[in-house]
Length: 206
Image (cartoon, rainbow, N blue to C red; front, side):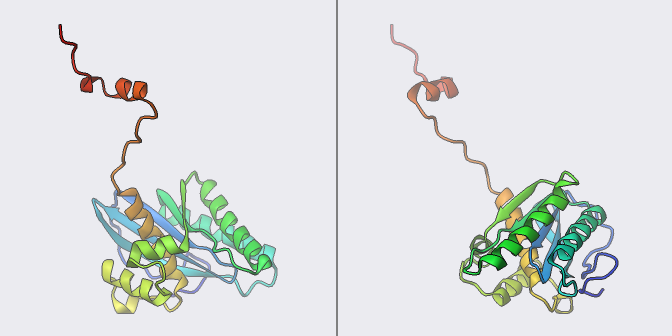
């Protein structure tokens, strides 16, 4: 399937009609190209459902691009029915205008998910690289290669544009983060500790 944007959600589909315990949609926001990747989770095993990009450079108007983002992300949500959205948070650079446009793109993608009541989690670029490769300074190519290894993606299914693998990395990061065991927060006072742990109180000696 063509990875470029088209009338229907475009991408490289990896699996057929498989039932998953949960589905995670990853988004790599952009104003020229926006990447997306969908992970299906069965038990503790994630696998790729589809990944691809949304081409936006053909629209001269920034507002038309935002409209297209909303339309296409809504279409992805309606087609793949994700349980959660993982989106890469914008990296704050020196170009204020570029950051403003990127922030708008991210916000519109989030609004599209929220319009379908999809919960959202944001992850910074360094956190995503660290989660997938073990190094926050990894290149896009290294992230893509690690995804191919972890998710066993055939070489002929790897996308040409790395925006798609960046989006898939956001989804995989969310899978890792939500799979971590929850640690109870410590008591703020001795009295609170005793209320939370009555079995830890030794009986008084008579």
